[in-house]
Amino acid sequence: MIQLAYIRENKQDVIARLAVKNMDATHDIEEIYTLDIEKRRIQTELEMLLAEQNALAKQIGELFKSGKKAEAEDLRNRSTAIKETCKSLEEKQTELEEQIKAILIRLPNLPSPQVPAGKTAEDNEVFLLDEHFMPKLDDAALPHWELATKYDIIDFELGNKIAGAGFPVYKGMGAKLQRALINFFLDNAGRAGYTEVQPPILINEDSGFGTGQLPDKEGQMYHVGLDNLYLIPTAEVPVTNIFRDTIVKAEDLPIKCTAYTPCFRREAGSYGAHVRGLNRLHQFDKVEIVQIAHPDHSYEILNDMRTYVTGLLKLLELPYRVLKLCGGDMSFASALTYDMEVWSGAQKRWLEVSSVSNFESFQANRLKLRYREGNAKPVLAHTLNGSALALPRIVAALLENNQEKDGIRIPAVLIPYTGFDKIK
RNA sequence: GGAGAGUUGGCAGAGCGGUCGAUUGCGGCAGUCUUGAAAACUGUUGAGGUGUUAAAGCCUCCUGGGGUUCGAAUCCCUAACUCUCCGCCA
Image 1 (cartoon, rainbow, N blue to C red):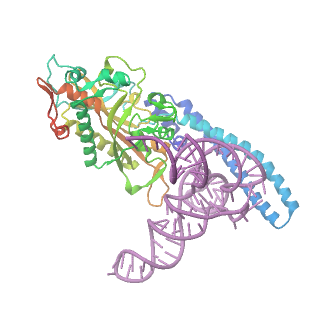
Image 2 (cartoon, rainbow, N blue to C red):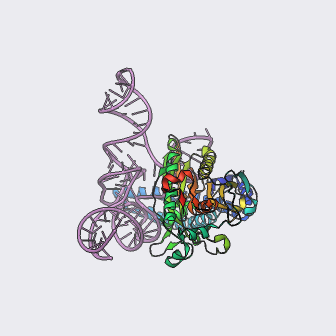
């Protein structure tokens, strides 16, 4: 949620920056601005009356005590009269506040000034390309879904029977590879200073609101109707919400957490070749990294996180590229996002395996997540997160890029985790 | 699932419907003492809004929502959550 005080002072800047996300917010911003002025006018008026009422109530109490009944009655009538006015002003104020919030919560975050203009994924800026580990495959190379069947490590049909499309069953070495990757990612995050947490994978509405999934984006999440809970689309939601309604000390920043969780996405309307195999699933595993940062350092930290993720890709011996997302391709809550994509040798496509974002104070404002410098007033913190990493597409790329005549080669760093060096 | 109890400031824990934003303890911060630290003592210590050069002042907040009243942390209704006992269970 954009800070109301910022809109108050910087109308034109807000409109200009939302235009980078291809949104004409002129009307919304003007409306907020006008409603806010009116709201504050009413608030002032109301508060003066409330002050008078408080004073009267106090006097009445004293008059009753000293037995001056008639005078007390007199004041009581006056107070009753004021009460009516207060009530209507209060209603008006609440209504205005609701109107302001209704607009405010559906406005996306302001993109950082360095976000490139653009409408679609085509307009993203290639920030970095590392083809060092580009595989040399011949035309007989198999896509990962065929390799999965050939080596009997992932069964899509079986998952279909149990839950539906997009819920694969990993078997044997396939399952072990999943576990190996999760442990490998968690261990690395731990070494990089992230504290491991295991959060709930069901969240309530407040949590969904805090990180920006609710309202409006509930269609992307599975909903447990009976208990009104949602399955998490990413660990970002429960982990960031650990810090909802908290004031942390400035010297404790940055706070770094990592979590492995399964993630659930409805992906309604997705179909076709691009969602085959592991490319797009309803349930998948991911290790997430989250940081709560001081506003002065959040962009350095974003760079650190990006470098950390590309470091993992190098360790896994995967060719990758880093995209700086354009305004049109960025998510609702993000101020700046880098996407990491790995090369999938047989599909001959780039697959997104991580997305690292700085949300600045957008989530913090919804979460009421603040830090305090000494005895100063609390200030909204910045939140950041990134996948480190999402498993399925990593697996897809590993299978395809490392296919050899006698099996699939496991990268050296993973062998201690898998216990085998080849899937046969 | 059944029965009961509760939800107050960072934590613990008081609070006859009328100077209660709230007693007290702990913790935190500052000071005295000390070579330094500890102990002891003293002071200070919630959030949001409004306002101001800065303050003062004023308003709101005692889980959320609604109600009664001139006046509510205190009474009533309601929701959520927590705890205890019983049942069930990985």
